[in-house]
Length: 389
Image 1 (cartoon, rainbow, N blue to C red):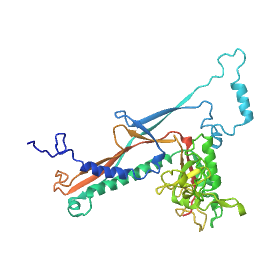
Image 2 (cartoon, helix red, strand yellow; image 1 turned 180 degrees about the vertical axis):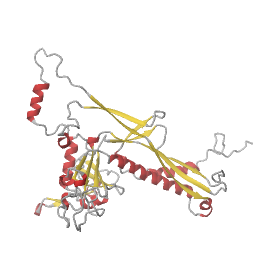
Image 3 (cartoon, rainbow, N blue to C red; image 1 turned 30 degrees about the vertical axis):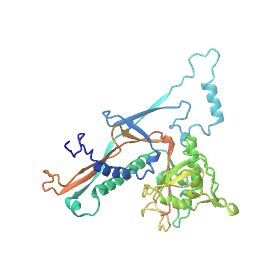
Image 4 (cartoon, rainbow, N blue to C red; image 1 turned 90 degrees about the vertical axis):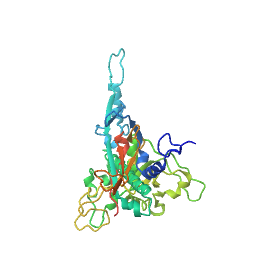
């Protein structure tokens, strides 16, 4: 009769233990629960033993304006160019005379971008009495909590890196972020100039088109159900709930022609697959609500004397709310080949050692590697607005 062996090795006739894998699976599932920002990140990877710095290169189109051009910020790559200037350029730099030699030379430009990996992790320290007296399944519960926490950290890292883009548009025609709200009165006079608005969203869409950013979606045809709407091809924008609050009351037109500009998702959801967190659409933009959207607290203009309005502020300056447009190919996260997104570790309290002489303390932990990189800053737009508190 064969000897029955119980263990975790290849010789086990009982098979490999899977309980720990089941525990880790619960944590990994929690680590993927929310993907509001991560769904817009391209995925890159780097082999092990290649250092911590990831580099990627790209060529710039020769014909384009460069980002250093004084007109680029307002007109993008090829839009709104002067007819006279283009005609003069063609005559001076492109035309070939009879028997032309080595003239009209151009040179390609290659740029390199880089980012560095960083390791992140957190842990839960617990005592043996948790195992002894708790009615909960601690092995699963603690991994789920750490997985959910790691998920939020990952989303925060991606959001933070996306918000480092230099491609910004400020509400109210402001030149800098600290000017936003500079003409708001004590009773909120002019406040609407600095909130999210139909014309501001149109300006953002125009800038992205001029910068050759690709639309995230195609046209959504209305379904056969009553009161459904057709939605134009669109960019996605990530907003916080304060900005959504102001969006929902926006109108355009006047008198008999006045209508709500914002279309909630239920009016077109039956005809289209929604992105995670999608809440509605307006003009050429579909909006995604993020409960974790960051705020630039007190980054706006100083409050007017005796301010009694409804705009969010820190008591001295207006708070600024970013509206983030992550278009195709604008941002990427980088993974390490052979390393998973997240790793869980644990040690039972009964492991007696110098740091745990009485066998009373254990821990659970996670750690993960992260690197994010902006691939094309001109296609990653941040629009800064004020919002109702």
